[in-house]
Length: 265
Length: 265
Image (cartoon, rainbow over all chains, first blue to last red; front, side, top):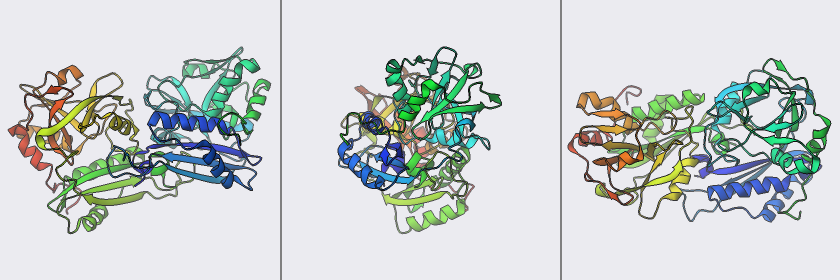
């Protein structure tokens, strides 16, 4: 009866646990709360959530923490039950290790996907549970490919199936905007927030698939991979298939507990 | 762990049970199988499904049968487990009776919704479990309103929150196309399939909200309501707020068991 199962009426977070701590914790919580606000779901208490996560993580060095928030149970019908309370599920799974699809740093192989993302500004940016587009795109992945580049309805690249995109050109980095589609990843947001401090020439800008073949390097970012270089997109091999120095510190920061606002921890 | 709950990776059908039989059964099954094909989910055996539905319905005169098919359980991640088997849930609930939101025939009150449907041809037409747009639109409904008209990203009306739309003008009926958004309802499809036989001048055509205020009548159609006249859209009262004779037979047909293909029943 839970509306997560009936309509995908909820949100989720996937969080890396390294050195026994939930990495980028406050960024994940901030996005979760923003998603609750957007969907009109009562937000969880961040301190309670932190305590619950801590219990699950206890004794683990590395793991993957998943949090799901749904609008709760209801009878049949799209309208929520005003009496219903939001549901909260937390689970902790083994860290996937270094093998595929958690490929070696120099071995992430990607492809273009035919599946295009729908255009829906109301849902863009948040990590909601309506993920059929990503499921369909995953089905396209050829053997040995771990990621795919997804375009929007106009054919402009937006993100990877489970990651955000960072292109490196000679004198700057570029990541596509997420106005109408895409998930605002915690790693992408980390880069955007830290770019002045680090002097990182990173722009949010529309681009085209052709630019992927002119770029010096392509990186795919998410909370489990950090900032991962792509070796090949289709048959195209990147000149720069490793992480340059100016991204190293940011990549490392992806796997630290962010002692920022929300939770005193 | 079921992917319906994780990603809305599945499909559903809501079927009226009247006189102890699942109405428009073969149309519902056809749409379900088409959805399985589109999403790449192993389809259920129609005869088995019919037998299971029959057991749930047994002894009930009127009820609402719900069928959910998901791609089954999997570990975390958008890619399906190739070993996983599709999940099938059937449930049977009481017929909602005649009170709101199952309003009297002359009392369906609707409104325009600000929520717009996303544009995604890959998912248009099928009744999948990614229904956040309908959930958000439901939240807009003002007190006393049972339905809302949803437009696409270009501002063209597509469907109701839980129904398809039929507009009546002096000399013809119109229902919007479902190229990029919307569910291909069983009642809408019944009308389209029977229009030649009945001489019903029904066209599938793009339209604009302005035409809703020029129309003689507005009807909202789904498997539980049949073809229901709308009394008011916002403050606009329709000249024709009852079902005209040429729709009566089709409305009645919505609540019969269709002895068509698929199941010999």
